[in-house]
Length: 324
Image (cartoon, rainbow, N blue to C red; front, side, top):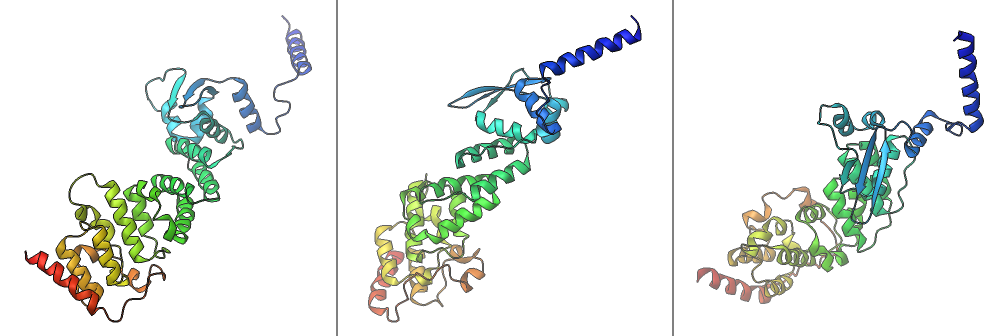
């Protein structure tokens, strides 16, 4: 066949293709063509089956595009890992979150319709090590409207995933509403890590007495074995006891008689009565010094000036227990 004949044949085929409408026609950028090719299954060389509790979908993609944006995909396809089944089964990520992950890697806009979707997408970005997508999800969640119940889920996940902005906004909400929030039963469902993060807030808007009650209530609900007093020490050491009145401390001991050993309760009562008395060693050894100079809040009741009447009977009571 002559060269001119071959050229005319190719030109006729190209003209015929344009007449049918080229699939790239409406793609303004090259990345638009990549995304369209993925959705239409053009030139794809990998298939994923993504299954969650509520949904299951199949996705097609291009290995090289995924490897450019994710070191996990790079290792999966080009790092010597044994050949994966096709389709590759993905469990524990929702199809909507995986679609957002693919769209991001293909430089397409993603859809975050709710906080739950943003958390799911963050989890997918975490699994496949796509930090900029994680940041985008963190930004979205940090701007979400919080209420007294949703804040616990948001804060717990923010602490678990170490989401910088979301931790700040959710902890600010808890700090401003601590007087009410820490006494809700939902507070008792938090993990120890989340409770510690709350205690790191220097200006919780809650009295030290109510904070003591809330922490002890959490301890009672979460203690598995061993003495309650030992389980509570890492938390109760953060309480500023000199801002609790002796009356309130007596009430607390009546409600939770096992929260402290008798010796520790006596030492704390003496400290409340006169700050020159030392607290138990476990109570103050790791406390940050600025916590003493900057009160956590200003809602604690003022200390009594004359405490002898209410103080002496309790001292004698605990002293008798310690001696016996």
